[in-house]
Structure formats: C-alpha cells, structure tokens
Length: 136
Image 1 (cartoon, rainbow, N blue to C red):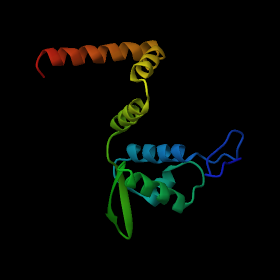
Image 2 (tube, rainbow, N blue to C red):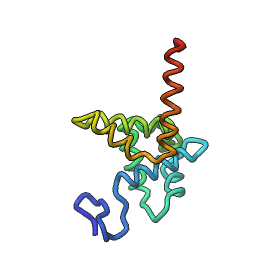
Image 3 (tube, helix red, strand yellow):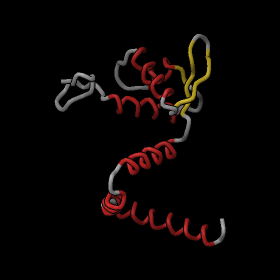
C-alpha cells in the first residue's frame, strides 16, 4: 500500500519511495561512462517505470544541482555533478549540520562503525594529521 505521496509503505505494492528511485537513477548515471538521456536511464533501471517518471526524477535532481545536463536532440543527456563519494559525503555533512547536538551525533556514528570502518577512519585521520603537520 502507498501513502498519499506515492511512497512505498511496509507491505505495500512494491512501488519505490522517491528517495530510492532518485538513488537508483544516480547509481545508473554513476555506472555509465557517458551522459545518458531519460530513455537510456529508464532502460538501465529495474521494473517497468514510465518514461515520464524517470524524466521527472532527472529534472528534480537537475533542479537540486545533483545532475548536469546538455541538449541532445530534442531532449537532454544527464550526468552527475559529482562522483558518488563526494555526493554521499555532502549528504552526510548535511545530516550532521541539521542535528542539534553535533558531538552526540558524531559519537553515535563512531561507536556504531564496524571494526574495519573504524580502522579506516583512524588511518584517514592519521594521514590528515600528517599532512597538516607537514604544512600541506
């Protein structure tokens, strides 16, 4: 069953939530080696989505500054404005900035990291500190 916004609800009809569809569209574009038209994006997505649905998502992502586009024929070809890692990091910063207790959010984030992610974070912070102490 879907809610009034057309988003999937538990036990629903299998429709994707808007955020999930946006993520799927971005994943298709990141995986591509070139800009894609709405029709080309639609071909790469699972399910039987309407062309207009894909075009709406592409337009919204472009309006948010997440995608760049250029004229191709009568329509547009789209490409991500940033790579996946940069996009995800920006989303993480936005979420962190929206919290009322930054320290509590960071503490909870760090305590819930896997052992491998915690080791990676320590390594990255050590590299960052080394660069800073060398004047870079």
